[in-house]
Amino acid sequence: MMKKEVPLEKAHRLINTGCVLLVTSAYRDRSNIMTLAWQTPLSGRPPRVGIAVALPHFTCELINRSKEFALNIPGAELLEQADRCGRTSGRAVDKFKEVGLTPVTAQKVQAPLIKECLGHLECGVVDHYKIGDHAFFVGEVLAAFAEEELFASSYWHEEAKLLHHLGGKQYYISGQREEAN
Ligand SMILES: Cc1cc2nc3c(=O)[nH]c(=O)nc-3n(C[C@H](O)[C@H](O)[C@H](O)COP(=O)(O)O)c2cc1C
Image: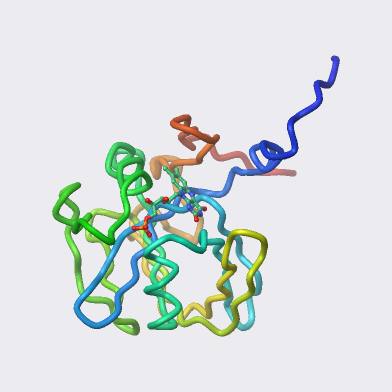
């Protein structure tokens, strides 16, 4: 098979397969939702995750101020809402109201969780770096929850259809679990 050259600014699309997250953040009386694909687990003990948030985003400002965020895992039925939360800034609009998602109180952070999502990680920022045009926040996971029947034995069940972003308006939906020998 022939390999084609990929433009460097599109190279990240070759490895961009982590599930799409809805990042919630809050500071004083403002809270917000933003869609995020650039995420990675970083450490098991202590439990840490990383997210890359573009510097101009309202979310970046709220996380810089509050030093906290929550990661909410949408199922495929939230594709349209997830896409819309990734195309408008929360500076001028309340995205919870605009897309019809329900904020619920988190246990360890001020940022609300999104009731309709399948799982949640509540995180406190322990480090941050400026990497090009993004801020990379390292979050310590302070609390985590998942739908009981979809995360039985601590693996996502096949019925948990998670979203994976291919770029632009293109998504994959996960659905087939395989076990290696
Ligand atoms: C599927 C999808 C994935 C996205 N992933 C990221 C990401 O990883 N990092 C980022 O900074 N922006 C990402 N965006 C763009 C932001 O979600 C978008 O610019 C959003 O409007 C920022 O909102 P805010 O200004 O309210 O924080 C993504 C958008 C979509 C639709």
